[in-house]
Amino acid sequence: MSATSSIPERPSVLVVDDSNLLRGILREELEAEGFEVHLAETGERGLEMARDLRPDVIVLDVVLPDLDGCDLCRRLKREEATGDIPVLMLSSRNELKDKMAGFDAGADDYLTKPFFTKELLARLRTNLKTRDALVSSRRLGQLYLEMLFGIGSAITSPFKVEDEVEIILRQALVAVKALRGSILLLDQEGGHLEVRGVHGYDGSGPALGARFRISDKLPMLASGDPDAPLAIRVYEDTERPSVFVPMVAKERLIGGIEIDLLGRDRRFSANDQKILYALASQAAIFIENARLERDVRSMFLSIIVSMAGAVDAKDAYTHGHSLRVARVGLLVAQHLGLARERMEPLLLAAILHDVGKIAIPDDILKTPHRLDAGQIEVMKSHPLAGARLLAHIPALADVIPGIRHHHEHWDGTGYPDGLKGEEIPLAGRLILIGDAFDAMTTDRVYRKAMSVTAALAELHAHAGIQFDPALVECVAEEHAQGRIHEEISMSTPSLDELIEHIR
Ligand SMILES: [Fe+2]
Ligand SMILES: [Fe+2]
Image 1 (cartoon, rainbow, N blue to C red):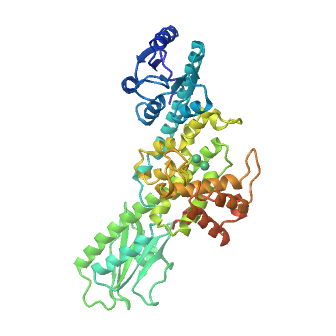
Image 2: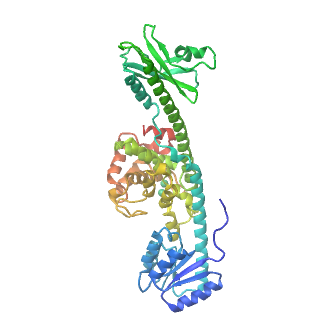
Image 3: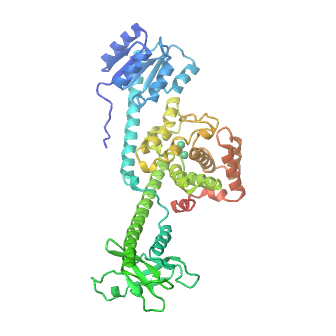
């Protein structure tokens, strides 16, 4: 990634104005200052030229013969091709409400006619610089994410590995028409086989968690002969006839399936042996992959958490903000009885909700002063920027709506899409509440933390306006049941604690 400026040596400017006189003057002045100047006389022509030429900056008159300048600006900002081009609006109206209308339409700057061309030039330059900072900041964020998420797209379901053991065991029993059996996996240290699943015994068989030496089940391994085959062992002569099928992945023993042959009406045939062997090797690959997947997944999640930490640190928020937002979101989601498949995207969306702030220049994010209208617009771009950053990662497709819509308000006055009520994805509504709750209950530079009770009162006061009233009710109930309390607002959960909510 390059830190050099992307402002072109000869920046192009598109002037959309119906006044012949003004267009003439601007062409002369701007060309003299090294701009490449394009002129449009009407709004439609301006839109067309903006799409075709993609100028570096647009000067737009508010009053045009065919289109309203504000509408045109809105259209330019909505389109992918032109959305990033700074727009400076020119108007002869100098009322605050006109300026606000311009900014609402997405204008980056506003100048009242008559103006000094020197001022226009200075403003154009500032806008080019701001845009440049924004674009390179965004590019940096994008690159960073691509690097981190390269691994993410291969990962699907993370949280269950051992559950599958039970299914494998049942398949094995059905395959050889046996009634009882157990499945054992090699422990972390590789020294013992531990019973991880049992089926069909009524209290008489091996207990879950029981441990055996490898040589108890596979005596030939104890001989020390490196070429000893990991073959099926059949114990037919004992009082408890059984077979033990080793599970081997990448030439490593990872466990075994033990089938009890007692009460089985026919001999254990060569065919049975083949079936079991095939099943065991499939199971071995499955378990090995699941373990690998779990490892990669937990690495992926830790990376996400450290990235969220980096965003929190960049922002004025206190450390751990994203994790605490996730906790409140998950508690409420649990209260609602949300299915596990929906909890995981919610967790990730909550942790990543402000990731778009990577794209916000530090001087805006960290300014101790009140933001001006233009800076507020840049700040408000973070949900969309976050959604865009993650858009190309298939594994995160379910996560994006929560990020994009975490600043939508119940009454439709939020952003970026002004969605209303239940149009707002549930994850967005949950994160908004978690975000507000954490903002209120932690210390800020400019004020002390509020108590949980006071924060709850605030949530109630804005229920139905900013927040989903039903969700605010859930927070209140969680509070009444003691799961949301003063200490919880002070402490930051670990990723493992959060994953516990999902299981
Ligand atoms: Fe946010
Ligand atoms: Fe936030």
